[in-house]
Amino acid sequence: MKPTDLLILFTCCLFTAVITVAGTRLFLAPAAAPPEMAATDLINPRIEDLRLRTFASSAPTDFITAAESVTRAVVFIRCFGQRTSRLEPNAEITTTGSGVIIDGSGLIATNNHVIEGAQRIRVLLDDKREFDAEIIGVDAATDLALLRIRPNGQLPSLVFGNSDSLRVGEWVLAVGNPFSLNSTVTAGIVSAKGRSIDVLEAADRIESFIQSDAAVNPGNSGGALVNTNGELVGINTAILTNSGRHEGFAFAIPGNLASRVLNDLQRYGEVKRARLGVYIQAVNDAQAKRLGLPAAAGVLITNLTPNGAALRAGLEVGDVMTALNGIAISSAPEMQEQLSRYRPGQKIRISYIRNGRKRSATALLRDKENRAKALVSHQEDDLLHQLGFEVRALTPPEQKLYPNGGVFVMSIFRNRAIEATNMNVGFVITAVNNKPVTSLKEFLQLISTEGELLFKGKYEGYEGNYFYRVE
Image 1 (tube, one colour):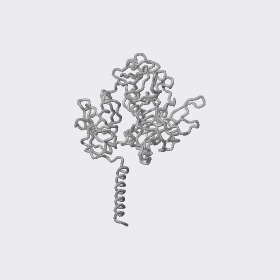
Image 2 (spheres, helix red, strand yellow):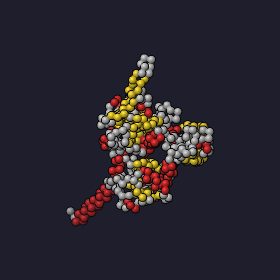
Image 3 (cartoon, helix red, strand yellow):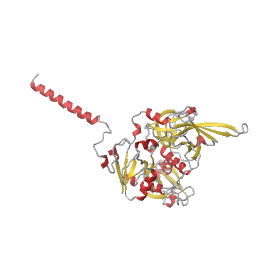
Image 4 (cartoon, one colour):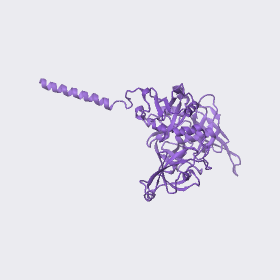
């Protein structure tokens, strides 16, 4: 071989090697590999700077870890009562269902229809211990109930995930006790969101179910719907079936709605439900064309409550509401679910269309007696709402990760001060204006007395501190 041919061959090989190495670095590098940055210098970082995956639960599809953590927090519920009839006066009946431990001290979420009419409720834990349960509160409008047992020591519990982040096609697990088979785990995908199936009987029912094809059967009611990260994103409630058994249609109360309702039941024994004072219906294609709408979306106002929140805000019959606080609504169930996250006395911004023109208004929400005065539960709740987020105390596992204390950011509202900082759900606030946060009570005191706020904290799985300034 000539020297020139050898040189050409060597050059080609070298060029090929360089291209291969470069391609490997470009295409096979880990997706989460962060750029070098000083975490302590990050003030109001963008979400992409935190390298947070919006739907972290979706990948990888590994059910083992989630199943192991969830089954310990799902309980078997047996209810004892009596049924009176001419043939069997005072006949004893027993019904069964499932429940989810949402607080290690013994708070259990389940369905209202599971415990309705019960004279005695027994709870069987995954470790075979049994307890009598007391009813803290029930809400027929969402078919939720909150029970309490009194164990010795802390119990394994589940943390609510963000059900709004669920996407159609995402894997979920259903955990419950079908046919009295304890701790049964089934898997499926999210089939749809915002489903209304007219299964609840309450006049003010809120049906905006997560539909999945996970196998759910009698006895699963009140059990957990979780993502593959083991976070509670729904409470299994109903099935659609002709046979009485699973046929691929299971429905769960969204976790964000359940969390709000259960929190009220714990604090007040009832739900402080806000009323907008509107009668609505979905918009069809013919109505959209007649009203000059760009698409058949939103909800049409067909009537207004006299002196209600919507009427006071200037809305009229024939207006089409398209969003609440910046979150789009395309059906009555979606609007009911969004409205259920607020309390009487809080304000929301309504986006609507009138005569083909986009408009907005601010409404002061009222209660079922059409009152708004002094109905915000606590002053700190109002302050959190004004800032635009919800927080909770740390769970026992989180306290081990953050031994110095802090509060966990549960949700962030659209178009509010907190959202403008780029803070993300899952942030643990450990200090306010360099003053340490050791408890939820201390956090609320700090934000009520400080002016400009600088939040310091951490994200689980990410090194260093992050800072968010509210001006």
